[in-house]
Image (cartoon, rainbow, N blue to C red; front, top):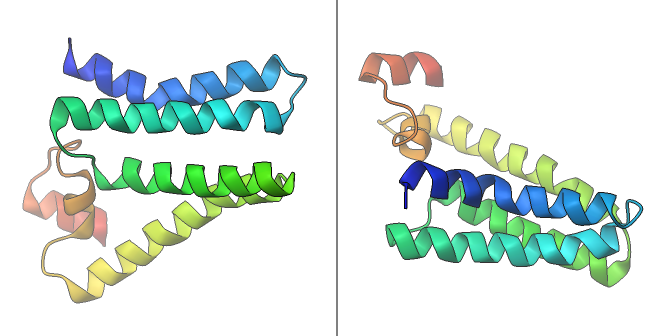
Length: 128
């Protein structure tokens, strides 16, 4: 299988499944979140199977989707799933802030180095 196709499916497949169930259940989050959690976990297993490792961002996102999706289902309160993007953005901002002051190599290069090909000067400019 083509590696870029697998990456595309594992990145956007869970989201497509979520929207399919969400819009076919009259916008009911309680119906759409369980397939999202299952699809996300399957996507992580597929990535691990083909690459023998799971990149940090999909792993963190999968953990947060499972955790906040579970809280949303358990408490029947959509505020929990709405918090997930904010938590991800806060973690990303903290990683960038930490990387700027406490590491020698730009943190963006560590996170996205295989997705974006830049020179060291490019990474420094992007990280500043």
